[in-house]
Every structure is written in structure tokens, then in C-alpha cells.
Length: 88
Image 1: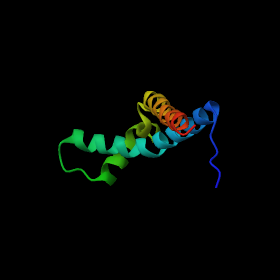
Image 2: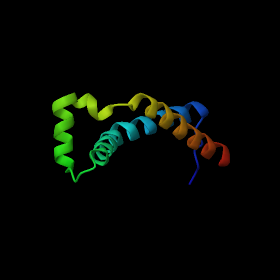
Image 3: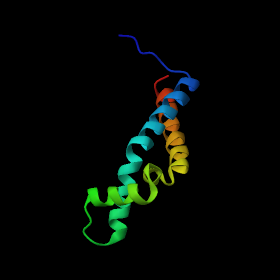
């Protein structure tokens, strides 16, 4: 068993992929949850999703994604770099 240590560039690429995937998959669920909470009534997930699609299209699920993606990518890179530094 031999441990392979990634370079800083590899950590950056891995952090970028990890952060991007996290946002692309998770952002729509967070948007729907936030809209349901903002309505203040007991709206279903399906009715909230349908409302977003009708008024804003698919892009409505990813509102505010750019800043979140930058933050997630930076955070994941930091975590992977720290892991690299600790186990070097």
C-alpha cells in the first residue's frame, strides 16, 4: 500500500470539480426550500417547483449560483490543500 500525494494543481482541479458538483446538484434543492419557507404557508415541494418553472424556467433554480460556486470551489480547494499539506 503506497500513498500517492497530489500536487497543488491536482488539489485545485479536484476542489474545483468537487465545489462545482456540489453547487450544481444542491442549489436547486436549496432554492426550492428557501421559496417554500418564504411563502409562509404549507406549500408542497412539487407546487413550489412547478411555480418556479412556470415563472422563471430552469434558470430560476440556479439564482445566485455564481457566487456560491466561487465560494464552494475556494473552500474545497482549501480543504484538499490542507489534506495535502498534512499528509505530505
